[in-house]
Length: 315
Ligand code: PMV
Image (cartoon, rainbow, N blue to C red):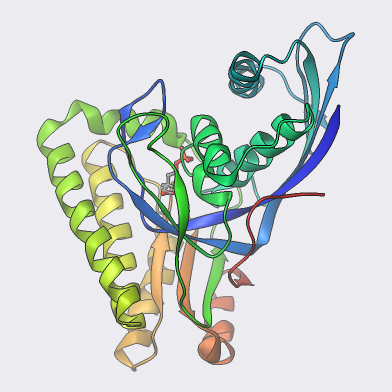
């Protein structure tokens, strides 16, 4: 009754922001992402008859409080759905800074969904695993798969799942670590604010649905510049939308990285910026340009060069 799973983080090109159903974690819109190869979570779940509650260790630290509650309520759901009578010891290692907008919850809940089900001998297919991981954290639905992934918004638990999206050769992501510290407001809390502003919410849904369609076209046409332009403008739209609800994640250094990106583009180099719920900036480019641009980004921040990574696996 013990299993270890590994899942990589993913970075959204068309973002998920806001829910239409909180209980089932159904998003307002579909989203599109790339699973990376360098940042991941490894989680071991061991069901133990003698435990009277779940025990959680993250990076060798015994966890209590709201973080444990979130994991325990996800485990409760798994116990209810699959009729598992035991509590578990959960041991997790993050090879990614937690809560700094490097989407650590995407890898964390994808690894946990896989480890928690297979530790009890339950073999879910990827679609089922994706719907399950989604309840832990929306973006985790996408980390079940490697490469480019689309998460269909769906209209209920069964129809809101991710699946592979398409191919794009030689795409690279430079993760610029602007700030490793935990963010001041988590995405769950921040997202709720969007639901308080109907006009803003309607605009966001409209633009995101259009961006999804355009992103599909960029894949069909193998048009990298269209992909990058869409990803950057959608990320900026998300941060503008967040700002309207009083949430700001980007800092001065984030804007310096974005400015460098704009300047490089003026020189004809295809680099595009995307940012999530934190100040860190991820640069979308192609393999062949890394040598040229890496030293420039490294003058501003620590940079990790990432490529497309694989989906969640058992170890
Ligand atoms: O999965 P969550 O609840 O941490 O939300 C992730 C939200 C963004 O990272 C900002 C966007 C996305 O699609 O990953």
